Length: 168
Image (cartoon, helix red, strand yellow):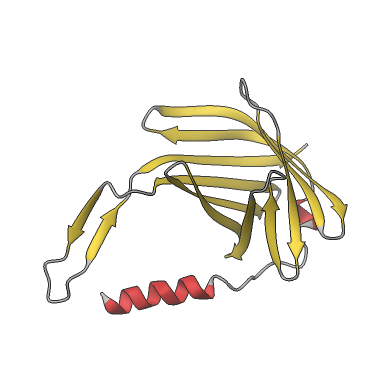
């Protein structure tokens, strides 16, 4: 188990290095529309969604995400370049650092007992978006029955969201 744990740690540390394409975020600019599939224990919901990305200046872009469902208003964020890193500024004191891993813009943050892991990536003419919602508190724990004793915590997946957006 130690070699596996060491590999996971090394991969996590190496993912902190920012690897981005030269055309980001220019190639992502535009008005994107599609539908987001929201999967949970309550079933599947399909909701229209849009994402608008436009330059504000050389280091900032508007990043407006709108789930087009009842009682949902557009979330007017900014994508901000800071030296060699990126962040989403929610314009309310909340700032979410972004990483580029495997050609994807990735972030993770927790809200209300849940950990959200968000992925955005451009593939051909489509902008993909996935969000995984995981309970922070373990639902159960197991202990190995081998010489090397270690504990494994299990966390329930609360929801999974997936969208493919196209320029309009």
